[in-house]
Amino acid sequence: MHMLSKNQLGFLYMFMSICAFSLMDVIVKWSVDYPIGQVLFFRGFFGIIVYFFVIPRERIKNFYQTKRPGLHTLRCLAGLIALLAIFIALRKLPLATVVSISFAAPIFTTILSIFLLNEKVGIFRWLAVIIGFIGILIITEPGISQLNIYYIFPIIFCLGLSYVAITIRQLSTSEPAWLISFYFSLSITFLSFLTIPQGWVMPSLNHFILLSLIGIFGGVANLWLSLSYKYSEVSLVTPLKYLALVFAVIFGYFIWEEVPTIKTLLGAFLVIISTLIIFRREIYNKNIITSKAMND
Image 1 (tube, helix red, strand yellow):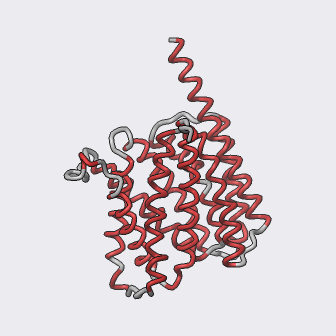
Image 2 (cartoon, helix red, strand yellow):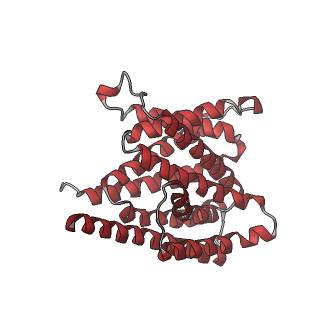
Image 3 (tube, rainbow, N blue to C red):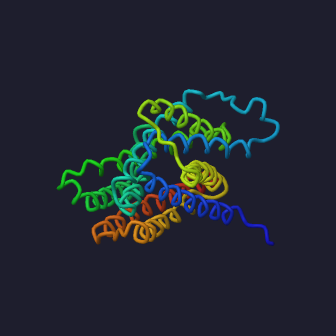
C-alpha cells in the first residue's frame, strides 16, 4: 500500500464526507414521520459519540477546554440555523433542488468575507457572485411564482453555512477539528431537548437504527470535511462537492421518483460555474501573494 500524498488524502476525506452527507440527507428526507426536533436529537447525540473516538488521549480529562467560547457560540448558532433550514428544506423540496441551491454557499461566503474579514474582492469574483445568483433565481423561479415559502430555506442554509465557514477558518488557528465539531453536536442535542413537549414519537428498532445513522453520518462527515481541508488546498477538493448533486439526482429518482427539471439542472450548472470561478480566483490570488512574499 503506497502512502497517499497530502492532497490525495484530502481528496479521499472529501469524497467520504460527501458520501456520508448524501446518505444523511436521504435519511432526513425519509424521516418525515418524526418531529424535526427529534431528528435533530439523533443528529446531535450520535454525532457526539463519534467524537469520543477521536479525542487524543492526553485531552480526555480536559477535552472541553477552549480559550474561544464566544467564537464557538457564534459558530454553533450559525450552524444550528443552517441545519434547521436544510432539514426543513429536505422534507419539503425535491432532493436535487435542495442540493443545487446549497452549492451557492461559497457565493455567500465571498460576500460575507467582504463585510466580516474586510477582504478585497475583484471583478472576477463579483462576476461569479452574479452568475451564481442568476443560477439560484432559475432554480427557485417556479417556486417563487407559486409562492412556495420552502425555497427560502436552502438559501438560509447557505447564509448560515457561509458564516460557519468563516468562523471555522478563525477557530482552526487554535482549536482542533474534533473540538469545533463536538461543540456543534452538543448544541444540536441541547436545542433538540427543547422540542420534547411537541411530542416525540417512539421509533421502532429499525427506525431507531436509521435515525441514529443521521448522527453517525453527520458526525463523521463533519470530521472528514475538516480533515480534508486540513490536508489539502480547499480549492482543490471543493469541486468534488458537486458529486453530491449526482447522488441527489440518483437517490431522488429511485426512492421518491423525483425527476429534476431542466431549470434545476441549468441553475445548478450556473451555480457550480460561479463557485468554480471563486475557487480559481482564490488559488490565483494566493499564488500572487506567495510569489510576492518570496520575492520580497
